[in-house]
Length: 618
Image (cartoon, rainbow, N blue to C red; front, side, top):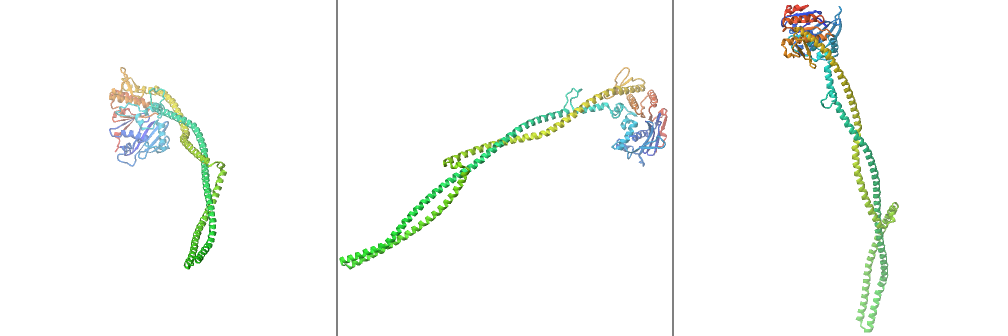
């Protein structure tokens, strides 16, 4: 890639249109005093190609005098073609033209904001990556851009990616990343002897063992559940038979109680009927006697007064005849008549009392007859009911009352025993049902546990495959890293050693790079592995320049990049400046060089010179 032209329409101090043409095949020296725009030109090239990484940068380079435009265009050649990239910094609208022919061809038009994400952005950066090998302004600033008074000698991970052959394959970082991922998966890492905490595989294996234990318990529960169900069914059957027996006993006991009660009631009624029958006979006898008395009373009531009267008359006659006393005879006559009247009165009164007694006797007889009829009816009904019970329980009729009462006691005892047995079996049944419910829950969970176990097994198998793949990948990457250390790092060390040795006129014979950090260690003929902290500021800047040149040159094996040198040699003495001039004269054969300097001394190095001091920038 070689830059031909930069056209600015408002950028930093350039608030009016400005155009700068560079020599694509040699060294272009841009000379100017401080604040004449050297750094602005360099930053405009970077911003046009990559855009602003932050909004603060965008604000910082907005033209001072606020012109109507804030844009720039870079024309460059690469891979046999000539292209022009135009960028509007306000909107990040980018247009890419192929200007190889007289009639430009539009290759891309869209928004390429480095702070966002869009299909347009990806399409544009694919184009940039094709011609530059990377899409980051940071990498541009860390390689082909060499600024003044820099003492940084580190090689960033992004540069490592590029040096190892591709921006997306930093083998060391990828290997570290894969090892970190492997550590999360398992603690079983062959090359790690230190005891470590469990990874995902160990955790999943523990979960699988836990589920296997639960499943084993559930299987035992299933067997116990089967036995429990059989026990429950047996208990239910036993209880059903016992309840039937209890019900039959209750029915029998009820019938027996009724039978005994009926028998006792029938006996009572029969006794009552016999009493009523005796009373009836007594009343009938009494009635006959009364009838006889009535007959005799009627006869006596007729004959007695007559007899008395006759006796009185006879006495009176006798007295008269005998005594010839008329007074005595009259007295006897009157006494006989009085006695006859009194006898008739007493006989009449006694008959009235006897009528009352006869009437009372009749009422009692009728009441007894009604009661007897009622008892006979009750006896009939009770006998009929008793007969119906006997039809169901013939044994009752064949037993005496004492036997029935004994049977009743026996049945009551059997009922109590049955109720106690049923209650005990009910408690056993409840306990078995509780146990059954618990085991059924275990069996219900069994299926979900089986499913979770299978899922965990799949997860474990997946993790196991990932572990194997990671082990293979890490092993392969370690081989790649060894190859990288043996090839690219060794080549980079040789390039840095040659450049630094040339700049320092052979004072430092070699530069090595630490294995993991790639931090430079320099050596002389008498001392090895000197850290940069032991070097002078000027030597550190020269080492920094040598490293930048070497890294950019190594990158240029894939894509030839331009070098932008921003007052990089201010601390060099004349001898080392002469050495730098020689190095640049050799470097320009493969790479374009744009040198920014404030000292006109460097104009002699240029195949093209741009004097900013002679331009009117106001």
